[in-house]
Length: 70
Image (tube, rainbow, N blue to C red; front, side, top):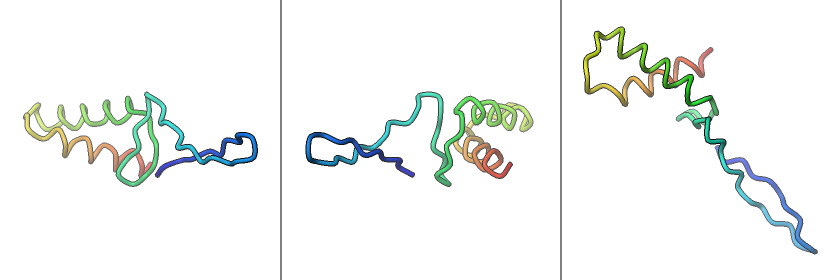
């Protein structure tokens, strides 16, 4: 989801995309959540799996789903 704002310059209106905050992540569902929340949740998923490597993307996406369903 791209958020835009209208900036007025003289007699023209310009639509300029807003920059996402550095501490938020736009999830695959288009909802913006703090990156740290996703990071912590994904780490807990990693720990609960016994620290097995190679599932970082799956953990991240699952963490996004869990957070956006709250």
